[in-house]
Length: 359
Image: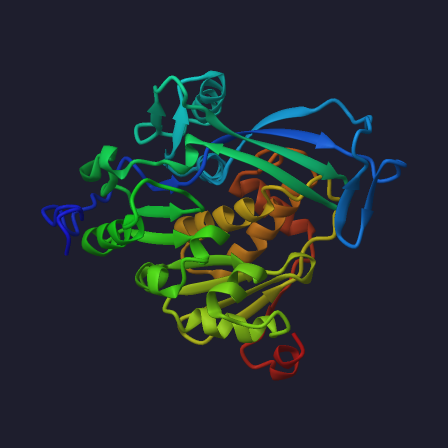
């Protein structure tokens, strides 16, 4: 392998009492939520597009400032779930960076891998979420330095202490970042959970193939999974799921919005769960909540996929009922308390060929 890969010296040496259960690798940004009423004359929804008249003034609710980004969302949730959580991301030495750091410390997230860019022109990433409550949102994003993670600054010997790495959508300065992380996981016995973003997916299977094959938990939405597998927009999600599973992950999951979630494992089991019907305030963060809660459930209680799907579905529903991608996240014991009152069912698609043929 290239000299840029981590050393083999500590191969398979993760201590059982490791100080780090899981490291989230992803973005860290500030979020500004703006609710736009759907019944205004100069702002309306048409053909799945948010339309606003140029030059107009639109009265909105007072904006909500929050912390977001896939790295922070998942790292915070892992900590809420009782795991020793850390984050690898990049922020600037500015007010936004201070707010991100404060949120991470509030939830006791290990920040030793958090990179702080002290350049005078560096800025912490920021998203503006134009949200139409009960419908959907449009995100305007400036990634700032969050897409410039520098793996040359990473303490690889400390990184290899982690039992799990959670790879979200992230940007870095190196082209071989995935190869280095794949090699680290393979040599050190680290488990991988992977929730790639569309920019990463568009690099293609030649770029992602090795790391997907090493991945224990792969979570993607239907659009992302179709792009990665080269599937047509009209392809049934169950067919796409089989293509995804054939790439080698232990568990492959496709989230399909209001159409539910589909999962496949490496011993031939196939599952489906419907979403909880709740009044959505904002859908931002639902995917992060689902993927990280499912991963935490597997880490905490083993490979009980139906249980993980149920817990993840509840936490995703909690998040969409609130503005902010971290507001509403509940710890595992609360999720299990909800399960006692909710009639959540996981359908076994393994032998249900009729159901599979129509999805």
